[in-house]
Amino acid sequence: MSRHLPSLVLALTLVAFLVRAAIYFCAGSILPLVFISAVLLVLLAARLAGRKTAEFAVRAWGVLLALYGVIRLGLAGLLYVAPVGSPHAIAHTGWIFIIVSALYAAAGVYLVLAWRDRFSLKAAG
Image (cartoon, rainbow, N blue to C red; front, side):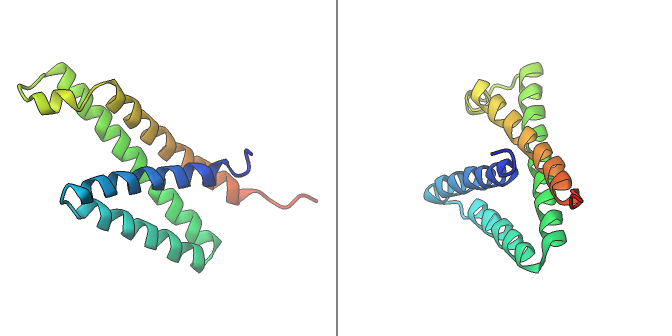
């Protein structure tokens, strides 16, 4: 299982963004769907180009995920320290928002580290 864990984490993060893109698409915004489609195309093209390119693409996705998670956590912290009068902002930055943000950040860091280790293993013997 641990050998396939990086691929599982990659797939779960992509599915999470696909679900979010579908929700936004139903609400009338196409930009998230365009973004995740571009990410999927880049990852697929990188996979077809070779192992080093795939490693770079997955690590870049990991960096983007980690930054996204940290920015979301910073936003939640900022709204906690300096609350605004917007009920919408307050309602959407609760504990679930913080947990999901932390998971995005952790998954991004994990992808960067796991893909580095996964392809740096030397053949035994």
